[in-house]
Length: 131
Image (cartoon, rainbow, N blue to C red; front, top):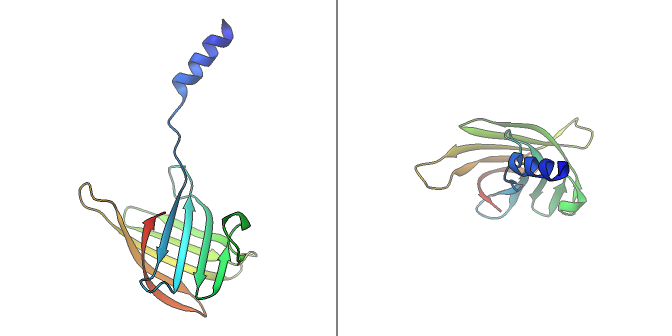
């Protein structure tokens, strides 16, 4: 009986599961991209990154794609913008900087657009979609 009461209590305390979600950002010509996987906590939590410029690809984990190693650096979000830096694995140099602005109106989906800068490769205007 005690285990039945404990199980009932756990069911009452359970909250709906939230899924992680990829945000895919790229330029109009498909030359560069910055994709990030966000976690389910109430703050911006970057779980994984993949970045590409031309034929060069970086990935934070081989489970998310082939590429040179990359690490999550700065990750900031407020009601107007998202700022994310991708760093080398030693966290001593910036590989990519994503700077996004948010816009939304009524029930329409949020729009994310901004710039992607990959030092030594270029800078692009990008827009993002949930993937």
